[in-house]
Image (cartoon, rainbow, N blue to C red; front, top):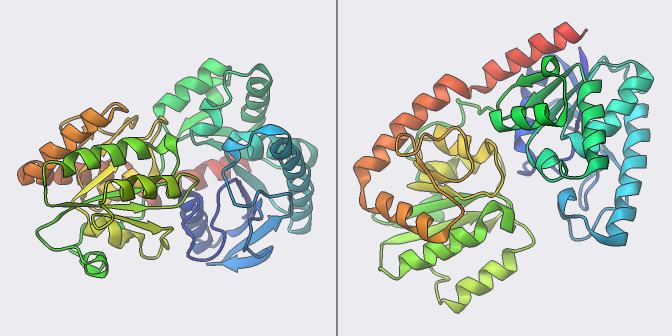
Amino acid sequence: MRICIVPTMFPKFKGDYYGPFVFNEAKKLAQKGFEVHVVTPHNEGAVYEEIIDKIYVHRFKWLEPKPFKALVYFKGLKDNIRLITYFISMFYKLFKINRKHNIQLMHAHSVIPTGFIAAVVSKLMGIPLFTTAHGMDVYNFQQYSLFRRIMIFSFNASFKSLAVSKDLVNSMEILGVKKDKIVHLINAVDREKFRPSKDRSVRNEYGIREDEILILFVGYLDDFKGIYETIDAFLDLCKNNYNIKLIMVGEGPKEEELKQRISKSDLEDVVIFTGDISPDIINKYYQSADIFVLPSHVKGVPVVVIEAMACGVPVVVSNTEIINDGINGFLVPNNKYVLSRKLEILIKDKDLRDKFSTESLKTIDEKFNIDKKVEKLIELYKKAL
C-alpha cells in the first residue's frame, strides 16, 4: 500500500524531536512494508527531499518564518502572507506527489491547514483520506465561523476522522461532524524503547547526584505548555531548600525569558535547559527522572506524558484525561501554587512515587501500545480501499 502522510509537524532532520508521534507512526508503517511518503513544510536547515528510516520525505517551499515558530502562532499581515504561500505550495506539492507515486491513501495530521488542503486534493483525485485531530487544531479555531465550516468540510470529506482524546470526540460532534465518521484513536508509545530503566547517563552528563530529586519537563517552550507555572512552582520549592533539580527539554520563543527569570533568582545551577533532544536518546531523560511535570493549558493526551508514564516516571499534569488523580499521577489546575504543593508531596513521599509508577505502567500496557494502534490503523486503511 502506498500512503501519503501530511503533517504540520515532522522531524526537520534525522534525530530531530519535532512531531515524534507522526514520525513513529510512519516508521512503524514503513517497517511493515508500506511505501510511506510524507509531504510536510520546509523549515530552515532542512533538505527538501530525503529518506529517513525508509520514509520518503518531501518538503515544500514557502515563505517560512525565521526564526521558526508554530503555525498556530501566526499573526499579522506578514504571517498571513506566509500562510497563503503555505496553502498554495502544499496543494501543488501534494497533488504532484500523489500523481507521481500513484498514492492510494492519504492521512492528514491536524485539520487546519493540512486536513483542509488534503481534503481538497482527495476530492479532486479520488483518493481516500483520513484526518487526525490533535487538539489545538480544533480548540484554537472552533470559535470562528469560517474555520468551523472548513473543519466540518475536512472531517466529513475524510473516510474517517480520528480523535486522540475523548474531549476531541465531543468537540467534533458539537462542530457537526458525522458521528459515523469519528474514531477515537489515542496516541501511543513504543514500549520497547520507552520502558522503566535505571539509566543514569543523563544524571552523569549534568552532574546530578543520586540523592537529588530530578524533575523533568519536555515540551515546546511557550506559555500554552505551562512553562511559567512549572518555573514558578519550582522556584517556590527551592525556597524550602529541597534537594532538587529541574531539566527543561525543548526549545521555543520563551526560552530566553525563562533563562532570565532563573538568572534573576540565582538558580542557574539547579535549572538546566537542554534545547531539543534527539528522539534516539529522549527515553534516557525520562529514565533518569524522578518526577515528570507538564501543566499544559491544552486538553488532550500529550505524547510526552505517555512516554514518561511508559518509563515509570510519576507525573504531575493538567488537562490530561488519562490521569486518575491520586491513583496513577496528580491532575492539577493551571495554578503554580497547587502545582508546587503536589510536587512537594511527591518529593517527600517515595512510596507514593512508586505507586504512581506502578499504576502508570498498568495504564500504558492497557491502552497505549503503538503496535496495537498501527494495527488498528491498518484495519481502517484496508476498509477505505
